[in-house]
Length: 122
Image (cartoon, rainbow, N blue to C red; front, side, top):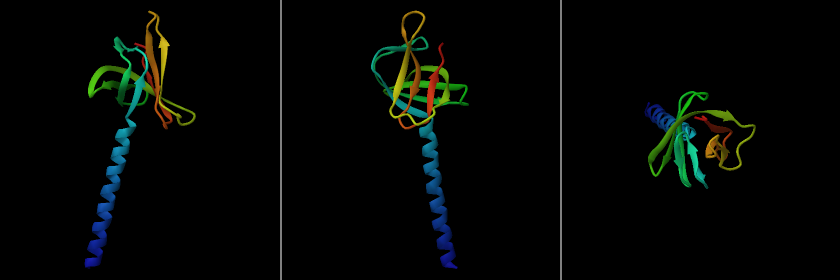
């Protein structure tokens, strides 16, 4: 009888530990770090060169995206996830010229992931 209780306890602990690993993986999936090497706009905010983190929530075609620097949200915008044909080999930020001759962040590909973050052109 004690052997059965012991085995049941071991199985329960193993299950709890594996659920914690899945929860961490899901959280990591909704964020990614990137670096800007030049000034670029997201919405009406100009981001200066430096290290940033993007966090997003919502359905893949209607995301709420927060851009964070030094632990503080600097801008919030909308966007969507785009499926890539293969995993990105590195993190890359696509910057496009806006109509008013400013640089705008359009897309962020994260290293070793098959989805890219596409920011709205607002």
